Image 1 (tube, rainbow, N blue to C red):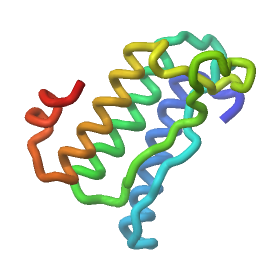
Image 2: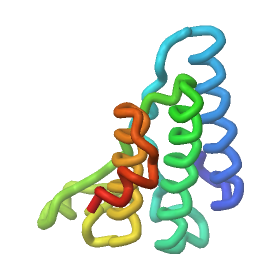
Image 3: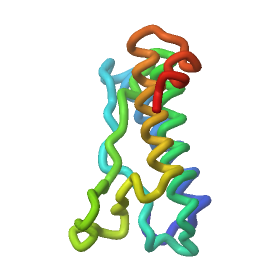
Length: 130
């Protein structure tokens, strides 16, 4: 979505994910995996905290869908790197453990989805989660 402000991108991604979950439920009757999403550091007025807000929005929408046994099956962000690979990245690239808030968010999302899959209460599994 080049040219959109951060607020417009947040609105767009929310509507886009919701509409695709609806399509998975109503038309496809299949799970939908959301892949290669992210927020470019080239977004107008980009602030590092925007990326956390963006990922959180995506993960919260997918968690709520999964909790309601809807079609949101998971997410694979673009582009995670490991240390010393910065030269291979683009404006979407992050090394998750360098950004503790995002690293915790990703870990928490994994635990929340695992809790649903294994029938545990989220609070119990999250307490066990690192």
